[in-house]
Length: 549
Ligand SMILES: Nc1ncnc2c1ncn2[C@@H]1O[C@H](COP(=O)(O)OP(=O)(O)OP(=O)(O)O)[C@@H](O)[C@H]1O
Image 1 (tube, rainbow, N blue to C red):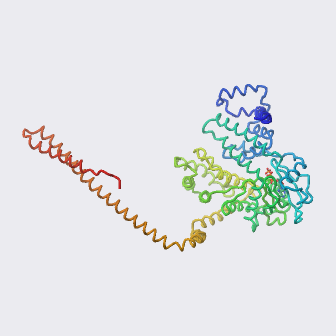
Image 2: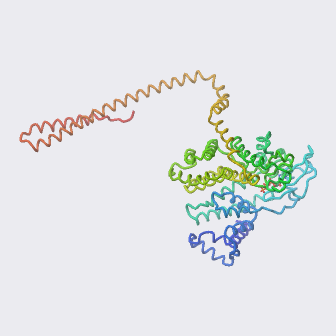
Image 3: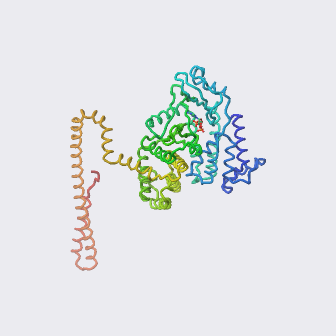
């Protein structure tokens, strides 16, 4: 442990106690040593007693800086874990960070390029275009083609700062997990683990560049989404160079209205984009906050989105995708029984789940939604409520599904903000039905046959040999099966015979015993008993010995 980390630790404790966050852990749940530690920091008092707990948490995170602010922003989207008031407060966290010195930006860029900025760029602007918690963005023009570009460069020592804060967070989360006990809904260790993956992913700009290239290629011919061109040859782990775009931030509805944007088309395109990314490409942008989405200005009647920051992308397995589509369709068809069944079939729910109780819970979630007009139904909310229900049944919802639900909630919120009458049913249902028919109908079989054609072409020359081998194996198998059947029949015959002899012997023995007690002439009784004994011995000896076939 270094002096710096001790200092940072103290600062975190001080902030936590100044904002009274220790009160958030139920007093009766805290063990004696926790109370002792709290008491030993007697000079650090809650200075914000007038504020509610959710607001105090928000303010503390704001105070603790970028890593905590980003954690708060991520938490605000975990509505499956947090109640609405908490999510609302945390969503207000803004990571407005002062820019870092342009001399540092220059030297970081040059270290990555392995050359001076002037070797590749003209007009490098020392005043950053934007400055965020992890990176800073500068504009320039590319020498080779004269085009305007932006250079996104990581903050100096951002990795060290994040790792130090993460280490503290992991310890705090483990302690909290212990204090809150088993079965708590918050699962702090899981949340921090999720966050760690997310934030560490954002620290590699080369990866972000490759994601952006893939997303761009998926939408090259699209009217709905534009992703700026990435100069891969100038992109490294700490630097990324891309085409500069001009657009209106999606949150600036006033400016969008002023240019006469077709809001209905824009909202529908947002939903379409989501479903295309998830179901067609299986590669979706999962960090859809307003700072990352811009709207084109060239043709307001036919507007398209411009997507930035592909640091966090999501994918689903084929099975999850299929079940998800069916889930949505079942919901459209108001079939909650099918929804519960799908959860079980897909394996999202453990086999030990009380199916009936789960179905009942799904019904409670879905029925009120069914009573709403279609333009008020939210897929994201349905998924969210289903995940919350699933958690009550101790189902651990897989991270990729949480990512998807978050993105969907965001896309819907955005769509409704742009065009409040947005009808998700009309927009998404044809898309999903089409996709499903491509997955399971005759078209799907044809497609699969086409996909497998090269494999079959490879296999064809070997086919006669394979058929011969299989027939040989099959014949052998048939022979073995026949032998097993014969053995089984013999076993059954022996078993019947033995049972028959044992039952008859029992009858004779019982008769013999009765005769001894009731008659003066004893020989019939003796004959009956002797025959009984002989038959018992015969029956016992004829038992089938081996049950293996
Ligand atoms: N290609 C571009 N053209 C024009 N402006 C851009 C471009 N790329 C980024 N910017 C500007 O820089 C800002 C920050 O970029 P970006 O979101 O990629 O950085 P970030 O560090 O990941 O930020 P955050 O942590 O907030 O997501 C954007 O909101 C946008 O204003």
